[in-house]
Amino acid sequence: PMWFFPIAIATGNTVVLKPSEKDPTASLWIAKLWAEAGLPAGGFNVLQGDKTAVDELLTNPKVKSVSFVGSTPIAQYVYATGTAA
Image 1 (tube, rainbow, N blue to C red):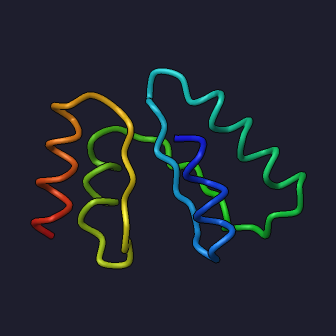
Image 2: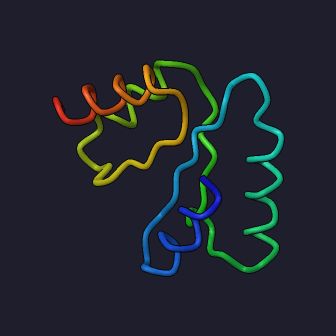
């Protein structure tokens, strides 16, 4: 998903990354790098959590777009849940 971030940020969008709950270390490191590079607070966000966090992102009306990288079964869930909202 690394290529999503620069495009979203360059076009004035906020990024919310929900990493694997098994090891979010790389995501937190990337957030730190964005902050050190001068990205304003709130421009790149890491949301840690499980299915509850995912469901909130997928059903929240403030979220206008979702990009997903992962397995086909989870992709189908993301699509079905996000489009039903």
